[in-house]
Image (cartoon, rainbow, N blue to C red; front, side, top):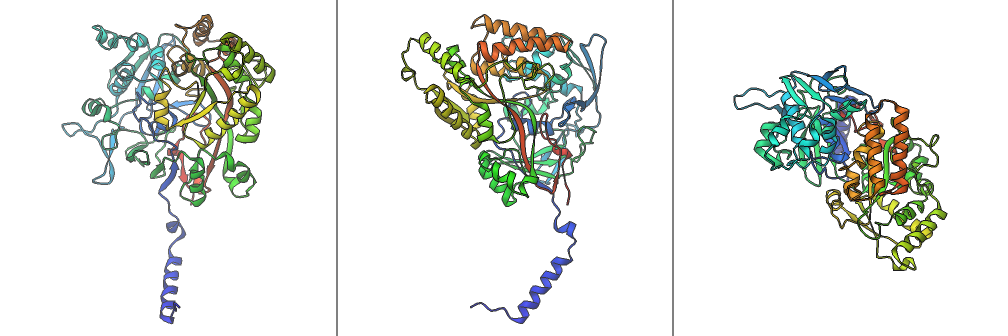
Length: 575
């Protein structure tokens, strides 16, 4: 038996006395926020990135000309202030001076300023923004979002869509409407006037980029040993598929939209399993969760402590299942309608999601500028309708020359790895069995592999995807996703140049709506376009409009991102 003698008791009491004498603030001092990125960010290159995980980090490392407020959606001056001429098509940006390019130096354990070959500090300037925009548009770069910037810049589409080997590439490049008039004066010319144009010019793919580094390191310029940035946080460490740490940039001057960060480091793990992340949250090794496991929602909401840490609010995102419209039998419009009408969206929300989401009958979430609402367009698109599902299935079988659903080929639904996506897929899978007597196989892929798989012609028949606003306008959902060359058309292969008149009409409607100034007129055109997209020739089944469902430890003071990405630089520890 182990005995404690009097001398040991005195020693233990001395230790307790010493610990008790440490000021509470010192004992509880926190400098590192423990976070879950959820997935490995596929790319931190502003010209290449397409996903929300990458964008969270890019926002902190490469602030743009203007910054969207995460709670109101309003644009605020970021790296520049601006003036717009009387035509509404020429934007002149005055770049903030004195913001250096920086990188983390592991040898000294600090963020340091980047210098040129003569030892001079490199400061972010208009030339860096010009280079960044042109590199994004360069067809050789291969950025999936380049088409958005292309239609927003005079000459952008001609350059972006040209053959990279064409003889006139230099002339096309020089004709793009971006120019550094002076070191800190950047001018942009757009082909038309639009209320949301400044939002596009402030998206991540138009951020400043370090030409000297990219020319030296090539595709590896964003690796942790190379990356240079200038925002509130810099990349400190990145262990691929494991963790990524951001560190406060002491050289960031701080602005109203993005103040100096108060939290020194953000250590983010990459747990795709929501239950594992939640277990870490309960154990105190993760401080903030942006994905709450669906299986725990009832317990969380009933728990007096956890319920106080739960935050639910509307979020400007749409969750949907896309169809590979060139792969049989999903090339049949009646079968696509049947699958959509068979989904009981409200039951999915009530029994699986439990986060106050709203059933989605069309794509552009209500609340966006010029987007339809359930009050104005209750019958728009497709909702849960078992009778319609059966009728459309019968028409599909007739078109396909089949006597029964048993003659359909095996069908596959793919989603990226996620406990929540898996539970949703299983619930919808059962709905399709109940309403259509069709059993669909479910498969999963890691996020980056998943995105690549959807580009192929033989991609799964059905795939999971979501879209969150980059700017609060219906154009961002309809034109930027489903316009020619958009991510939706590329993944679903729903392309007006190869398909029928309905897609052509859809493209005409969204192009016309884009340039109108009257919001009511735009809404009418977008409603017509939504009916084509969501009912007449649907490349997708809209499922629900998001809410943000997050958990935060009580010692973290933060803002909540109802628009865009987290503003980590505004967060702090309160004890």
